[in-house]
Every structure is written in structure tokens, then in C-alpha cells.
Image (cartoon, rainbow, N blue to C red):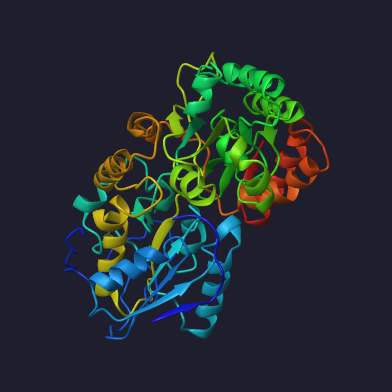
Length: 448
């Protein structure tokens, strides 16, 4: 049965693994105990039943749940569509808090577009410890290096990463050739080309800075230390360092030149007036399928991929990360065997992750299938495999996943000023203060 609770927005057969050990006794290493657990952090399963498996997904992952139901018609499923916690809505946390008070209502498996759910889901006793008997270590070893870092608390894995969302440089290969431009490899070259485009081809764009995830594309790649999580409840915030200010200044210069859009790439205004004016667009791996093919309907043979630019003096190139999403299994699930089977399938299956998912799979084997499918599609103007694989290992590790939402902070602090014509550089101190204030309100010790 499918029932829709909320209208969701963006973004996205391996053999099912038998689950032999459903009674778990493992130390949660500082995390809270699960439902029915004791004070030593043991996870004790809820009484098991044959009722329907309740799965919460956003609109993009709805296809995954439906495919699983089609392939497993004997599995009773209640598929619920919700916003996926998009833009840090905290819908899931709010509902779990309610369910904890009433003692019922928890979904068995849930997808979230946020990578920071473990920061509250562990202490709320919602997330089940996956590497303590539910999911074999041999399977967990198949994820890309550090992919499940946002899901790990003191060595215990509480969720599984869906896709990596590493950033690369998307560009219109046909226009670059027609106009005789070279794809920039450094940010300095990128800025220079952006200004040249503004003069020679006014109206065309080399990027967009109007989304709430703008800092995750540009400032993260610039190694801006605005969000360095140093402990379970500790963060270092330095949003005015040279790494931050020079990227902000680059964005400001291209905004002033009008070759950098200040609209959201998901807005109707952008789709109507700017989508066909893209020369270059730094962005995550899911831009290809979700944005260019899906939203913009860009014709095949135009869009290509290059490595993300880096500063000329940076000998260790880095990239950002936009989303990726995670899957959590409820510690309250009364259907652990069915829930674990779905969880492992949805994160590792070639039938979904390799052949259907719009984003670059976090599970390495599925990523190979996904890349092969992209190449076989004939949509792209070049082979996107090498730059995406390289970027998967270049995500800068010092931008963390705190309980507070960076997207929500940027939306409240920077976006209004950007709309009003303020420069990003001028708003960096206010952004730093807002991050610090949000972090402290969530109980973080803040170092600046």
C-alpha cells in the first residue's frame, strides 16, 4: 500500500542477505540505548511480528521502494512518502520525538536526504546499531572509503549512506568547443573565464549561488573551515579565514559580472530563464541525472564532466559534497528480518543503485554498474567515469555533519542578504555567528 503524507522535492538485484542474528548484545560506545535496551547500551529487539514493513522515502527514492515491492510481492509493505528532511526540515526528528512519547508509530526503515541524522537518532534511541549483528562487516566493507563516516558514532554504524554526491564541474562541451574556451582546472582560471563569458556572451552562466547548499559546493571545496566537527558535541567555526574569503570573493565577482546566477537551480525562474544558458556549473554527481536530464531536459551530447577546479597553490585538490542521503533502520522495528533485507537491498542492489538511482552510489560495486550505465546511455559528451571516481576520494574531510543544518543556517543568514544585493564576503562574519549560535543551541562547544 502506498500513501503520501507530504509532497516531496528533489533528488533520487543483489541477493538478499539472510539475517542470522537478530538478538544483539553490543556496546553502543557512548550512544544511547535502543528501545528495550539496558543501561550498558545493549540493543534488545522489540517483539517481532508479521505485520507490514513501513518504509518512509522521499519522492526520488519512491521508485526504490516500489521496485522492491514488485520484486518481492510476498513482502507486506506500507510505503510512505515524506519530504526526506529536505533543507534540514527536521520532520523526521520531530515525528520520532512524538512516537517516543506515544510509544508507537516509528517507521521500520527511513530514507533521509540529510547526512547528520545520526547526531540525534542515536540519543533518541531510534537508530539501530547495524554493525552489531544486523549487517555483516563483509558487506559494510563494500562502501566507498569514509562513505559511512556520517553514520558512525564511536565505532558503531547507525545508518548506511545512499550516494556520495561529490562535486565536479559540469559543462556544455558543445559551447566550449564552439567558443574556443578551455575547461578551467583552477579557480583562478574559472573566475577569469567567468568574466570573459560575461563580456563575450552576456546572459550565459558559469555557476549558480542561489541554493541553500551553495557553501557545500564552493566553500567546502575551498577548504573553508566553517563547519569542522571535532567531537560528538564540539565544533570549530572559522568562516572568515582566507580559504573562505577568497572563495566568497570569487563568487561575488562573478555575481557582479552576471555570469553567476543568484537563483536556485530548482526554481521555476531558473528553469524558464537560465537553464538553457549554462556554460559551466560546479555541482554534485546527481546534477547529471536529476538536473540536466530530469529538470532541464538538456539534449544528449552536450553535457560533459571535468574535475572540480582547485586553487593554483593547493597541491591537494579537494571537493565538496551536496547531500547523498542515508538510510536508517529503527531500533523499535517489529520486523527486523524484513527491514534489514530491504535496507541491504536498497543500498547495494544493482537493480536499483546501479541501474535506476540518479546519484553516484556509495556502495562501490553498485557505483561501477552505475558508471557503466551512464556511459552506455550515450547522454554525456565525454566519459564521466574518471572525474567522478577521482572526486569520490577527494571530499574534504574537515567539513563535518553536525546536528544543526548548514543549509537552514545559510538560508536564514546569507540568502536574504544575497537577494538584497549584499556581497557574500560582507556576510561571512554574520554567517560565522549564526553557525556558532545554532551549534551552541544544540549543545555544542564552539571554538572560533
